[in-house]
Length: 249
Image (tube, rainbow, N blue to C red; front, side, top):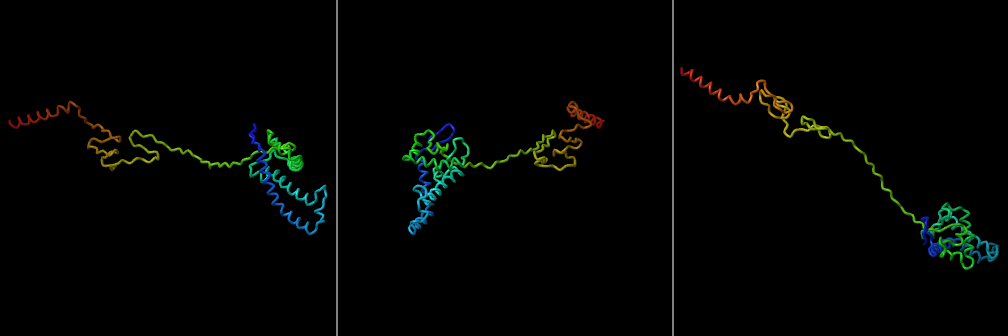
């Protein structure tokens, strides 16, 4: 495993070998559908044209099996970037130019590139280990790289909308009748009935001394000064003495 400055992690030799073995197990199991009927046909008719050599030592049967196996690598690599074995090992084939793989790149890599990599004791595969970007001969020829590819699921929480509610605020009037925020008037704890000489604040008003709406005493028409209040008892005593003198006479 190798890091680079482009945030790529290149896959090494052994992890790619494990992915390749998984792929060939899958391909070998799938090709049994073709191999078994051809094997039965070879027993019944050894001179069948499918079993005769056509190109060097390869028969039509051999070429058919080879093409089916190569199509597995070409189709999955071109459309998804990875075969089933590479998916198990979290690998992906990418272009060195960070673009989408072209069909020519994939076909050239999986046919000519792999054929040349197998020559001379598979040396084209062993050079993956010491290479800085972990490239095999088929990667160099097709200008591709094999990197780790992890898919992470990110769950986005449901957005919550907050709304601002404007609540009216009333200032308390000077008369003492406070208004709550909802606009309803406050009711006194012990409400007094209105009318019959009762002021709005619930206090009994004395006769002749009406109360103002704000609860303050209203001055009468003939107010008494402090001097008059102090001399009132002496005046009463003098009036009583005069009445007694008049009675005695």
